[in-house]
Amino acid sequence: MNEVFEELRALAWSAWHRRWLVLAVAWGVCVVGWLAIAMIPNKYESSARIYVQLDDVLTDQLKIANGGKDEIERVRKTLAGAVNLEKVIRGTDLGKEITSQRQMDRAVQSLSEDVKVVSQEDNLFTITATVGKGSLSDAENAKLSRDVVQKLLDIFREENIAGNRGEVADTIVFLDQQLDDRKAELDAAEQKMSRFEAEHPELIGGSSAISGRIAATQTELRGVDADLAAAQSSLAAISGQLASTPRTLAIGGDGGGSALAQAQGQLAAMQARGLTDSHPDVIAIKKQISLLARAGGGAAGGMPNPAYSSLLATKAEREAAVQALLSRKAALQSEMSRAMADQSTEPAVSAEATRISRDYDVLKKKYDDLLQNREEMRLRGQVESERSSFKFDVVDPPTMPRKPASPNRPLLLFAVLIIGIGAGIGAAFALGQLRSTFATAHGLERALDLPVVGTISESLSDSARKLRAKRMKLFYAGSVSLAGLFVVLLATEFLQRGMVA
Image (cartoon, rainbow, N blue to C red; front, side):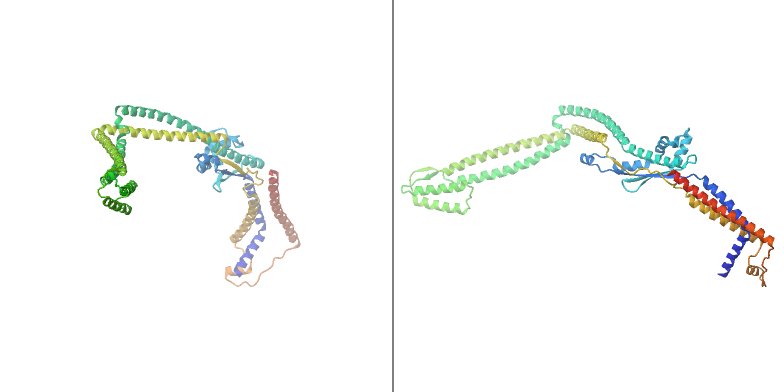
């Protein structure tokens, strides 16, 4: 710790002993540095924030597809491109002195480094421009930076509104041309298919249609078979009932015939309701009829049985139903045989029918898709001609900068002052090291490795002291002048900022 203290004492003594050198070096470094800082033009930064609203109720309701976020992101990335920056230069005072394409290229390259478009959120963008031309005043640079940001805002709007509408119009023209081409191809395919169908009506729709007809016929035939089996079963049942029913009813003299007729009538009514012979009521009524018949003995005479007549009519109806189903089955079998014959006897013609039908379906689907896209695009163009699908809100308009963004001149001026003083002290210390002088007795003792008995103080005469006092006044005046110059430069800087404001 003592050694460090001794070094500091030696440094302070060297600097004070050679204070004129320190002051001269400090003046030289500060003047050169301050002149260099004065040559750096002030750069003024202007910024603006815009909010792009992509949610549009009308376009969502109409299901109109638009570029949305992808379109906005594309414009954001290309906003700082060479083409747009050239528009900015030509639309502001930056292009006043540009007379050749080479100068324009250099100006675009320089401006591209000073323009930034940053996406803070999905729909919030910040546009920043920094301008600092040495040929312009601070007020002109500040105004120019704001004009550059405003021009970029205008381009942002144009790229998303006017540019988008122009793209819609170009797309509609392209779709119209494609529709005309597809319509001609579709008409030719329709004529070809019509001629083929006129020559081969049995192959309309191609082999797929024939296969479909066969499959449909088979399905219907299975249904007819099921209905026919049910009808035949029902006919067999009614035939059995008819066989067990007497044609006439016997009539007795003591009224037994009347009871027998009544019982037989009840049996016929039950059978008409669909009750089978195994039903308990049918079994009971049959036993009653048997008893009444034995009790009546050989009663003479009889009357027609109404149950027999009813069953006979029902049997005729069911026989007609069975015949109708048999006829339908025969017709379906014949139709399926013809379809299978068409499919097997003319495979080349069937393949041609399939190809023609497939080509027509493809062209028709493509034409319908293009027509739908054209109508959606036309509706989108009509919507955007009345109102933009994007809504722009300028959250923060382009600002008029009040102070330069760079350089930080007060800090640079102070830094140069510190560097100048440090350079002077360093020069004094280096010169002391070169001349091998010793500021303290301890330094001399350590350097020679010999004991130092004592030191002799400097003794000055009156004239020497007066001369030293005069020189000290001049030194203080030089130091104060350096500090005063620093203060004047600071005041000038803040005064210039006030003039911009």
